[in-house]
Image (cartoon, one colour):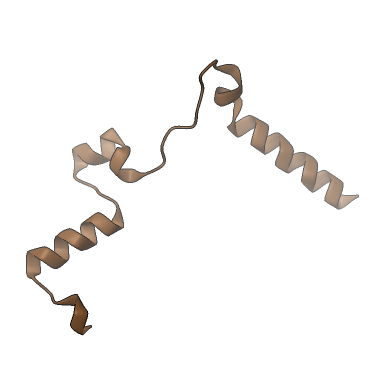
Length: 66
């Protein structure tokens, strides 16, 4: 019985999260990647990989020796 309730709740959550995609003709989920978020770019925030790359080149650490 409890498994059925969980399945129903998960199903309702999926429908609730995808309402925009379902109701729009060419609807799709927006990108969740930080580098594609305009507000984050304005604040100078990048994804962790980009920030790591920039820091390593800024201080010139040789990662091969780590």
